[in-house]
Length: 244
Image 1 (spheres, rainbow, N blue to C red):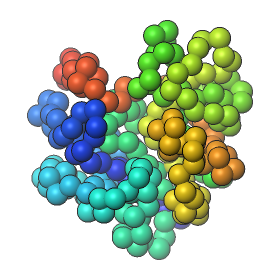
Image 2 (cartoon, one colour):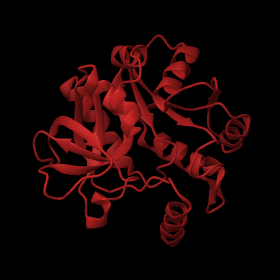
Image 3 (cartoon, rainbow, N blue to C red):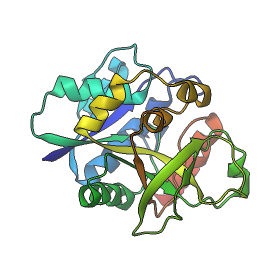
Image 4 (cartoon, rainbow, N blue to C red):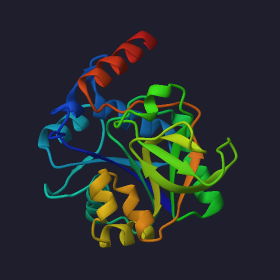
């Protein structure tokens, strides 16, 4: 069975409107992420969006995109609509890659995919070690608490996700915006109503835990910064322009 990679994206982000089309080295953020997903070479890649401007940008940079509805509560709901619309009968797994993480490491994407195949896990994600103590308090940096400490070969269970933490808690890591679902798990996930915990914390992955879907976590080699604010964008732009 094949894996399908879907990147949900929209222009109306509350903290940084228009963010997917902001350019770094002459290429939009969304097209940078698309190219990373393509290079990982784990399956066909599509951007799922409600905005024609995003679709046009992806197409003009040689990518594939699909138009979805405007009323989705979360990115995962958008991903599932795209999967249904594409109607590919040979898909067994779906990877949901966040459209605002242009620094995500290709090897980390591949490793998550490999771990999912090996363990037959329902749902998997990535986390990296927290290197900067101020990240514990930073609400834009989502944390995951795991059952065991993470190392390269482990694919341990997530106990909880939170926005604020302390380094006194054991096994706290920086959660990265990537999920890999068995197709049936994705179907189940979107059939559940948003949970109170999910709404309160603004973290859709809590819906899975609240409905007894186990989430496994692999260690990412590289910490990745998502673009949530203008400062994030300027920091990532600086890193990527320096690398090039």
